[in-house]
Length: 379
Image (tube, rainbow, N blue to C red; front, side, top):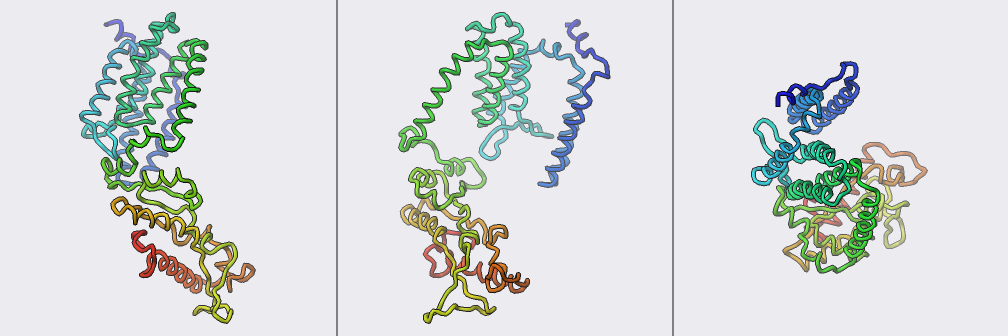
C-alpha cells in the first residue's frame, strides 16, 4: 500500500502538461456560463461555482498517475453501482425522471460519472485479461459487469445515457482487441434482427403496441405540465390513417405547421370580395376587401372538432402557432391596393390592415357563430 501511494503523483515535466486542452475546456465552460445567464440569470452563480470546482478537480486529477487510480477499479465499480441505486431510492425527480442526487449544496447526476468509471474500470479489467479477450468467459464477464449500470440508468429513465454507455462499452471492447470475426458475427445477426423488428413495428395495428402508454398519459402522471403533450402537423398528414391514430393516441394539443400563417390564408395573389353587382368591395381605408382562404386550416380544425364531439373526455385543443409572421406573409399585403408593384403603405395603414386581418382570423375560429369556438383556448 505504501508503494501505491508513492506512485500517486504523475511523472512528467511541466512543459508536457496539456495547457491547450485546459484553455479549450475553460473557453467552452465560459460560453456555457454566459448561455445559462442569458436563459436565467438566477442559475448563473451556481454554474460559475460548478465550473470552478470542475476545473480544480480536473487539475488535481490530472496530476495523479492514472495507473495508481486503476488499482482501485473494483472499488470504483462498487461506488458506481451504489450511486445508481441511491438515485432510484433517494433521487430527486424532475420532469418525470429521477436522475439526480441532491447533496444539499449541489445536485449531482451519477450517470455522468458512470461514463468515466466505465472507461477506467474496463481499461483495467480488460488489460488484466489481454490474452483472453476473445474467449467466451471474458466476453460474458464483461457483458455481465456492464448490464447492471445499463439497467439502473435506463430505470431512471435516461435512454440517451443508456445508449451512450452501451456504445462506449462496445468501443472499449473493440479497442481492447476483440476479434473482427466475433464483431462480424454479432453484426451479421444483430443488423437483420433489428431491421426485422423495425419492419414489424412500423406495420399498422400491431397488438403488442396497443398497450404502450400514450405520451399524454405519461406526462399526466409524471409531469408538472399536467399532461399537455403537443405536436405540429400539416393538413396533408391527416390523409394518413396511421398518423391520425398516432395523433389521437399520444397528443392533446396540436399546432398547425403553416396552415394558419398569412402566406396560406392570404395566398400567393390577393382575392377580393365582390358585391351582388360584381363590384369589388372596399374597406374604410379604400382598400379592396380581401377574401381569406381557411380551407387548409379548417381541414385540421374539422378533424379535431369531430374527434372532440365523439370523445368529450379526451379532447384535443389547437394552438394557432402565429397570427402574423413577417417572413411568411406575401409581399403584396404590404403594398398599396394590394398590388405587388405598388408602393409600400405607411405605418398607420399597415397597422389597420393587420388589425382587420387578425380580427377576421379570430372571428372565424372563435367568433360567436364559429363552429370551432372553444377548440383554440386563449383566442
